[in-house]
Length: 189
Image 1 (cartoon, rainbow, N blue to C red):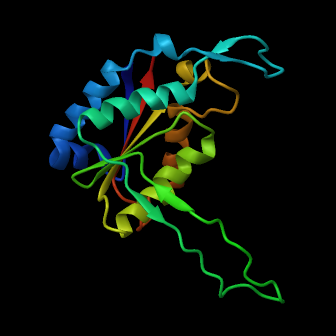
Image 2 (tube, rainbow, N blue to C red; image 1 turned 60 degrees about the vertical axis):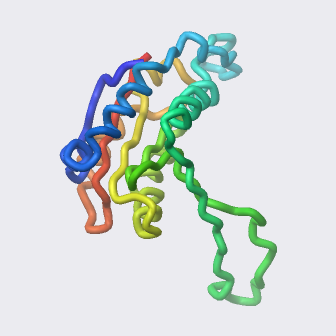
């Protein structure tokens, strides 16, 4: 796998290079070690591409997990205790997802990494919500989001977002005062 694009959201590239240059080397090495040939195992059942072999996000994620773990990255998990005091009109507390949690894919020395080969909403959630939450909880201060470029996403299930689309949306959205620096890496097979 190769890094085919880099986008600096809220000075993400500059911050990662300045504070986490050694970890960026880790990330680049891990990406370069991913052999995607064994990850094209998902048989499409979609109407638009029946029977076509596609890249499996689960296989890709497993490859990343293995390599990040070997390099000592952790996957912190935070238990969610949902509030119940905001119910109205007699809607009482119901059982609220026992064991609910939020988790970062990988963290090392306050740099968080999320790998996203899923639907578009998850890319936005990672950068604009999850990374902010984990920053406020003291786990990270900077993030890296790894996403496919369009050519790669075209060989996955329908609805997988891609680097070019994500960058356009972030550019149009702009930066909020709660956003942390995030480096967006677009990868290709």
